[in-house]
Image (cartoon, rainbow, N blue to C red):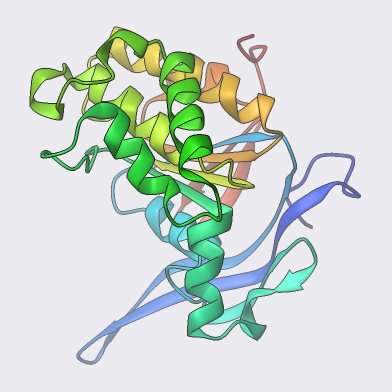
Length: 241
């Protein structure tokens, strides 16, 4: 049975019997096993699990950074298996926004310039790039830090810039790998609100891997990866507004 919400005609991403294994010398490690998963547009899906359980692997498969050992992944009904290397790269550049635990900001660029650099891959005039960068920096509450360099920002502020940078592309898919893992609890919860606000405004999907169960308050659905299997966790709290 597919792990999916009741309504599936709005599906953006579908995994059908997806497995992923890695071979090291003569040892084969099964990371994901026969995963069926449907993710709807405008949905926040939280992926829980201990370190090394396969959370990052799942995100890498959805983001076309890796390929499954077996099974199919479809985005808007189109199979990823039909993409060549060039089209996979273009898919990542235009359709996917990545947010990581470590912010990966360019230290020699200001906050606004980090966002603008991410937008240069899009067919936008320079005026629109600056306007969009300004808009997203304001959306994460850092309009007054536009000209600050990463080294002049706190950890939480750097992550907010990273969120603005990823979402300013207005991607259909946002993949966040432990985005609060390098932050204290209060700061981590503080960066979740602008991230999910922007995700909802753009009607994108957000798939977030975390080991912190408190972050599930922002989710529409929660799944756990356990020994390579994906299990849905019943919701016990309402998603944060």
